[in-house]
Every structure is written in C-alpha cells, then in structure tokens.
Amino acid sequence: MIVVRDVYKRYQTDHGPGPWVLKGIDLVIPPRTNVGLIGRNGAGKSTLLHLIGGIDQPTRGHIERLCRVSWPMGRGGGLQNTLTGRQNARFVCRIHGHENDMADRIEEIREFAALGRMFDEPVKTYSAGMKSRLQFALSLAFDFDVYISDEVTAAGDAAFRNKAQKAFRRLIDRAGLIMVSHGEETLKQFCTAGILLHEGRAQWFDDIEDALAAYKESLQA
Image (cartoon, rainbow, N blue to C red; front, top):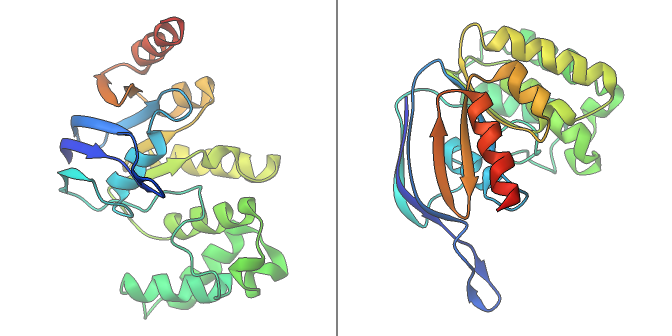
C-alpha cells in the first residue's frame, strides 16, 4: 500500500518559488493494483511518480510506502553518468544485497537492455532511449511490490517495446504497477484503475475506462 497525504509540490526558479504543480494530493493506492496516471502535459504526472518513487520530496505533506517500490523506469534518472552500464548494474546489485548472485543479475540486465558494446561505455555517452532501456532492465532484475513506469513502453525500437510489454504482462501477475503513458491502449492493456491529475488535484477512479472518460471531459473544459 502507498499512502499520499496532503502532498503539495512546487519547484524553485531563478525568480523564487514557482507555481504549485500538485496541490493537496490525497490518495491511497491499494496493494497489487495497476494504476494509470492520466492528465495533460504539465499536469504533474511525472512529478507525482517521482515523489512516489522517492527520488524527489514533497514541498509539503508526506508519502508512506508500506511496500517495496521501484525507482521510475523510463526517464534515465538515478544513473551515475560517469560509470558504465555494467558498473551501474554492479552498484545497484550491491545496494540491494546481491553480492552472491551478482554475475547472474548483471548478465540478465545486460541481455535485457540490449545495449551491445555500449553496456561497457559510460552512461553519459548514451542516448535518452538507451538510458531508459538500462534503467528498465535494472528495475526488472530486482523484486519490488510496486513497479513505477514513465513512458517506458515508448522507449527504444519496436523490438524493445515489444519486449517491455511482455515484461509488464509478467509483472502485473505478481506485483502492482503505477504507469504514466500517453497511449490510451497501453493504459487499458496494463491498468485497471486510474488517477486523473487536473489543475494540481488528483481524482481516483476504480476503473481505468472511467478515468480516461473523465480526462477527455477535462480537455473540453
């Protein structure tokens, strides 16, 4: 379970605090639930995802993670740019206490990311898509109760997108998923519930179809 309590978020700018991106978000995301985050560009979807994943902190309010939550797959954040893909994989294995089976996990990461010789080159030389592929492979190599994904099904070529979709199908059989995607069919395929972000507020829907219908209505407002 993930509990989001009265969360506000805004960022500092050169001219002082910026506008509120999120305004008093209150949510309880049940265990083993696949949720789509829906909203216009700039609605705060990635911001909320990063807060849930713990790679950013609310300006006000708090988030309780009563389970193991992955980092956001898909945006390349959290990688050490001066390290190679292999070195990043080794670092994450150590963090998660997998010294004993590190070699097997690194090979699994290398195979899934399909970076070829670039796996042994510094991450700072990667394209955005290559970083997303590495980050996705890193997440899959470890067991989490909830996986969070930011447009990862759009990363890479057709073969990788197909591989990512198959991996998601396996994930939703054993864990929860919180997903940002602009693809309506992708959300319908992987998500049962939805969260609509609009004007800094969040609305929960038990049915992803209802969330998508509400989103379409909001576009006409």
